[in-house]
Amino acid sequence: MIVSVDWVLGLSAILFGIGAFGFLARRNIILMLVSIEVMLNAVNLSLVGFSRHLDEPTGQILALFVIAVAAAEAGVGLGLVIALNRNKPGAAVADLTGLKW
Image 1 (cartoon, rainbow, N blue to C red):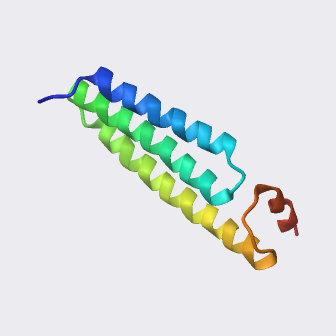
Image 2 (image 1 turned 30 degrees about the vertical axis):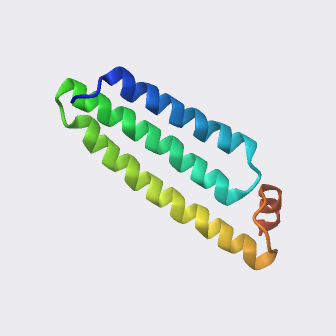
Image 3 (image 1 turned 135 degrees about the vertical axis):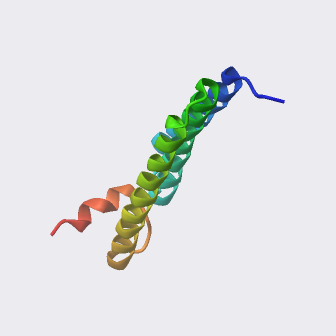
């Protein structure tokens, strides 16, 4: 059974909407990072869906690059969270201004 591109794009749009709402509604840095990861995975899903529809591997290769960028973003974000927790316990976005040199 082959899934239509419409269903893949619909699921991708729903995931992106959930990620965007999670990013805008949360004040916790870790949950904001998870929401960004959900949005990037939605983009990957649409890239792979279009790649499958067009019978070209270009979208799948681009999805691998997006995964690499997501891994780097997670590393930087977790580094910020660790630096924040060293100074003051808790992971609130408002506390990031205290990390200035």
